[in-house]
Length: 322
Image (cartoon, rainbow, N blue to C red):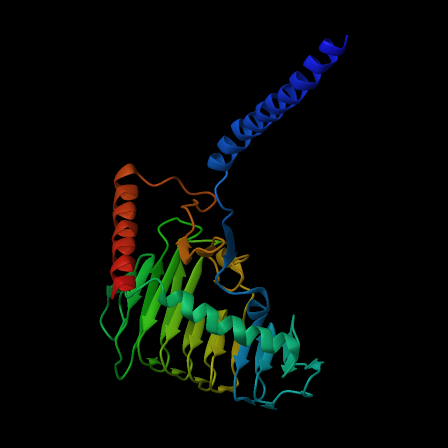
């Protein structure tokens, strides 16, 4: 019996080691394929952060208004404290009869967060690169979705501009304006053949001036200031100034669109910002989504669209290397 006990005392530890090794091997055989099948999680978010998207008018130094203007969405300033032409109180969100579906924020926590998100949004738009070069004056053009650069000029729009989404509800247009954005009186931006997922972004390197009676559309993200001259409108978009003032004069602006563009969040769609833990930030295009009631494009159209997006990808790579 002593011999048997001694033998078992030597065998049992070895069996335990073998069992442990088998258990570890089994865990590895299960976990390793799962690790390969489940890469690092990718998070995606809209280009405009939620606090930023709540503002239709946002200034950095001041917001000045000659009443009466009509604003749908928040009005705010940060880090400046001066808002004239609207009821306001520093640090407190205040209601004003000119503002619906929002409040007036002078140096509130929400305005501070929105300003930080504005700087990030402008940086992310720059990641898309220069895109296709357009003439300084966009008058008379019909432009399909994509990324474009518009050089400075005495005017960037002296008449009508049409943005044609070609039946894609998630169409996007990004206009990189290295210097200024200037429109002439009575100019018009039309957005057609798109829907609730569309986005229009004017990334302005200095200041924007939307002249008298201009019917503008889209989100103006300006490094410096934005001036809306008398009776100019932006009924589907925003006026967002990163470091300067926003000046209004009997204007109508809305971050909530109607008609075919209803649900587009003030034309803030079309793009997502993706990040991975420890990885780069990228701006990606949303996939094609047909506008309800329209037919899917012919294969030849999809090939042209794919070629255009591929070209944008190449331009983005070149831009990153530069």
